[in-house]
Image 1: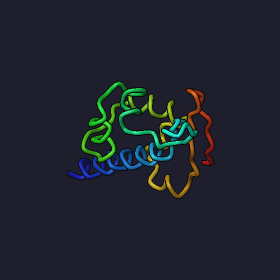
Image 2: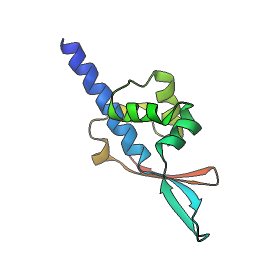
Image 3: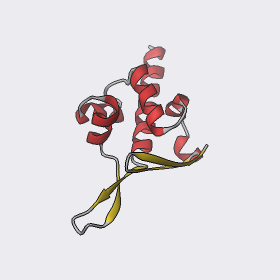
Amino acid sequence: MGGNVMENNLVNQVAKNLRFLRTRTFKEAVNKNNELVFRHIRQEQLAKEVLNVTFQQIQKYETGLNKIDAIKLYKLAKYFEVPMEIFFDEKLSEKINYTKVIRNNAPQLQHNI
């Protein structure tokens, strides 16, 4: 039974850190006034561009309802340009100043670990 609690804690930690990284990743866009703006990467974008899953699956990953397999976790780490172990860090939001801006498919990353 203790194993299940530990497993659930890990799943929830990965979920929390995935959401943290996604909500601090911005994508260049042009608004209706033809102005350059930056918007958070949406679950739909992450699902389609990185993992080839539905946005509902991203929602399930971010809430801890579904576990992320190792290959998908590797793809996410590559996309966010962070080591895989970041997803398991219990105090990620306290330790890291992370911002990623995607400009015309050329990411620019700023983070301190």
